[in-house]
Image 1 (cartoon, helix red, strand yellow):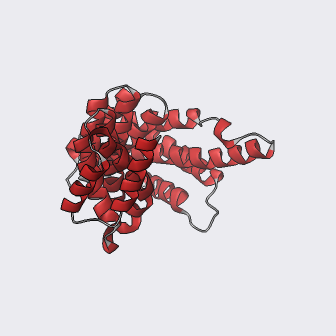
Image 2 (spheres, rainbow, N blue to C red; image 1 turned 135 degrees about the vertical axis):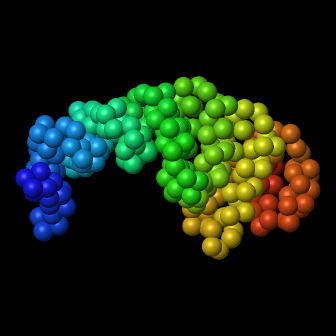
Image 3 (spheres, helix red, strand yellow; image 1 turned 180 degrees about the horizontal axis):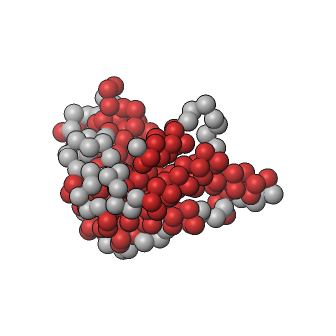
Length: 273
């Protein structure tokens, strides 16, 4: 009964909506969670408590960062020079790693891998980040809406490590994600990656999928935002191995999309420069 009361107090400390969403609330939650874990390290809710402790540290880090950033900017500094809140990230990372190590059968394992992967990326460990995110992808169903963002992060990690082929593979997975925003960005990055690897035809096919979405009413919200950059990249990919009239013939075979004139004009500019 005492343990149940303690768990209830922890829940209320973390979800009290009558108080402002502020640092003090998350500090109280973390203190309660740590007290529970000290008293019941193998309790029936200990796996959940480690996960929630990591979550609380993240929330606290976000609020603390906003407060620090406001003070930083008020002193006349630039936002891009603001420090990353590494200490609170390290505390969150420790909680998630303890949850993974001590409770490998917990239903929270996939989420802990997901959070750990993104934290490690923020802290400058792309290889370890990708390992955790790959584990997350292995443990979740194909319709999980966070798979796309995980695949995008893996791709960015590989680019950071100079592994362009692996990045292409990750972006291809993101392109097939159920989450439309991640899928759109995955297609754009896949096109860029193929172009960077001197595969203009593959680049064009990825960009074509994205551009087709950008003119479809029910799919346009994210793809349309990427259209200007996609058209620039499509023009460069065509200019690699096609003359303007050849590109025009290819786009005619695609159904003469409305954006074909933008591509032809940009190609003419590229060839004239």
